[in-house]
Image (cartoon, rainbow, N blue to C red; front, side):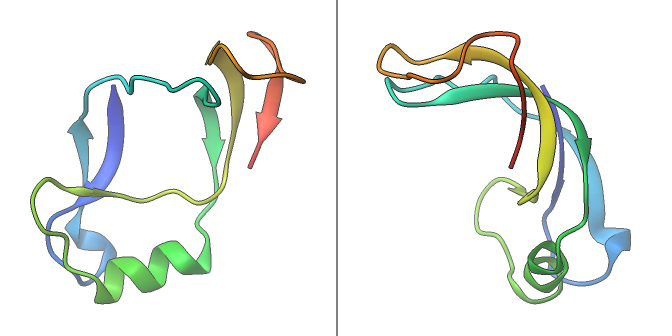
Length: 85
């Protein structure tokens, strides 16, 4: 899967497209195929101040998309539902 991440705190020039493994969901998780994002002020502040340790830090507090997979204990959502967070 593709994601936007960074390895060094600082400006938006530090952002890069990175490949990450598809997450393994737990019983209460949703996996969302993201169709759109916004830049939240928290994303900007983290990128400017927090240096990740290890793999690139993935940003993204706000997104909209379609439920791709649900955990066994999830109620109220089904695959194909449009969601935002």
